[in-house]
Figure 1 (cartoon, rainbow, N blue to C red):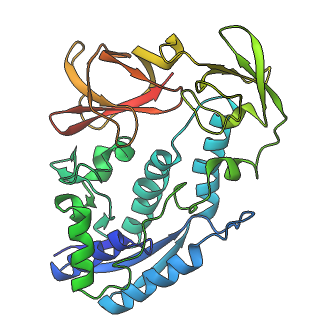
Figure 2: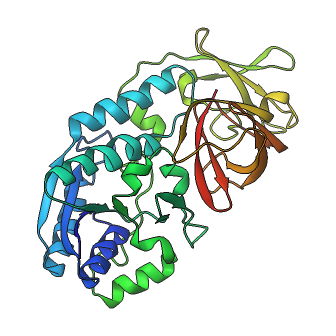
Length: 342
């Protein structure tokens, strides 16, 4: 059997991943990636508790345990990227960048140099012959976040949970007396905890109040505390007048203005042709003109589309497609790759 380094976050998924690999006869080492330890106002970073839980599970399983300190790289590759994208008026996905730059690059390279033959994580996904496939559990499938991982990395990666549903994972963890069996799933920014994006960004950017303008009549309908915090399609948190709800349909970062509309059919809310940049293919690119399916957000529907090399032509217009987010392309359950919405 192989020598496998398991990324253990202190949650139930990575805990069971380690347990299953031990039971399969692999030479398993647990690794906690220390990516972020900074407390934020009103939110204590849970890293110390997560590290303790991961270590307890490793002791329970009788496996070696290590800590890799990736804080400087995480700040540079994930946090700084995210802040720059928001400053530019786009809506990035830090989890995708974390997977690309930290888990399946930095962690993989460090583990291999340390003697590992493979790495493993608790992601809900499957790998076969260098191909990334959707997980059995459609609700928990995490391939949307993994589309920028390379084929070379996937060939050195194990995803033991790809065949199971989340309820089954918790049952299996309880059966093995893992202390994380009923631990709540972490929410929020990758490895940072439950803090919201507004609270997080507020620690790193200086914003000024500005106008919220009804684009249909050019009237000022409210004020915001920074255009950076708003995204296309947003409805909640606008704090503007009564009546029919307003939706964010645009913003001007230079003028620090946010534009809204009560018209759900506003052209800015619906897109059928989507241009992609920074495209990444795991294997061969699909032929131009081939029909495939695209997912525009985690747990979003798979939408039929034609891809011509740079532009997606959707069969049905989709709402609130935002610059900076990822469009992930699927062919028969396999992730071909994807790109960033321009």
